[in-house]
Picture 1 (cartoon, one colour):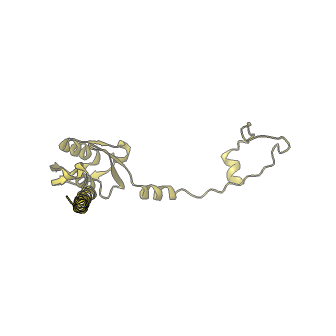
Picture 2: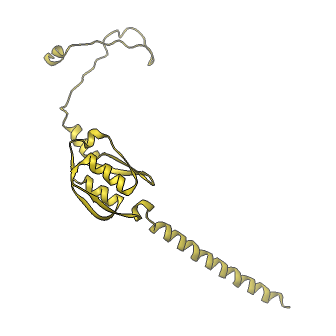
Picture 3: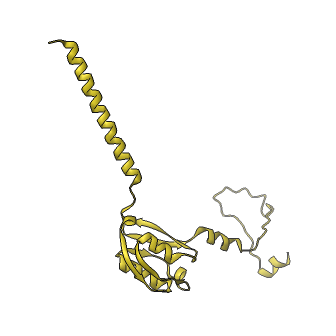
Length: 164
């Protein structure tokens, strides 16, 4: 038996195995990249009537058999449109929350959390008038203090603050 032939055959066999392994890895990576979450793939026949947002969110959760977490103060004065059709939970929530300033995030496979959209929260915060605070290091400046010592302060009334 010629040892050179055996070496070439083993080398060809190794290359064949390596090629098949590369193909399998490519398939696995492409499949993982294209895979969507399970909750987004499942569709439900939704029949959620228009009404207040709190009731609509509870009805959507009941029909899809998922949990939707929200703070009632965010939804109590909001209305929701009718959601009809065969949709994913994400599409149903998107339709319910359109125009409310709220958004949702998936917490786990069967739980969603509704929260205030940060852009609307920023607009709300920006409505606060500007306040200028000026400080001086004059009170008890002769007493040495460390960062963790009790620091002196003065309490002033609203009238004094507005007058200054």
